[in-house]
Length: 169
Image (cartoon, rainbow, N blue to C red; front, side):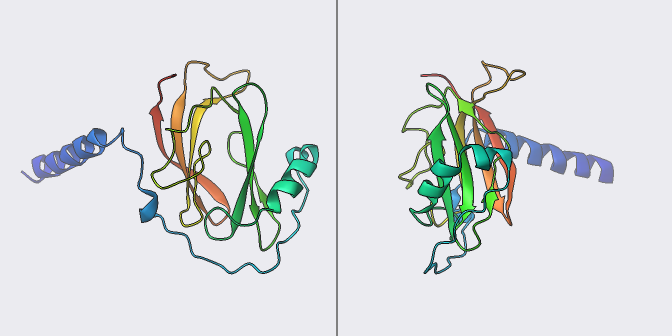
């Protein structure tokens, strides 16, 4: 009898999760700690990607925090309808690179978190969530695999917490 109860509980939980699979996570449930940044740190250029795009990263970081409390998302194009980005810590200058370097078939303004003025990636100063829409652009990637992907940015790491197919407009 216990095994049946455990199975029913697990099945109910699975169905509940599956039914909500198409809904983006709510950014307000992933609040970021706010930090007062009086002097912006200069980005620390170490990686190959950062060296290649040092001017774009350095100039973009000057805009100040716009993500997860004290970070700055710096975005630039990498082809027609494609973009790249990094996250710069406005306090330490450390640069964090996302798991995917270039996102193609990017999307439009409707692919954003509610309340966010930013789209693709979509993010806000008050939340640790970051949304991308598109196809990872690389030689082994599926050009038809356009997806909405949400990452939780916490303690300098990007953790994928949501991914769903996204139709091409």
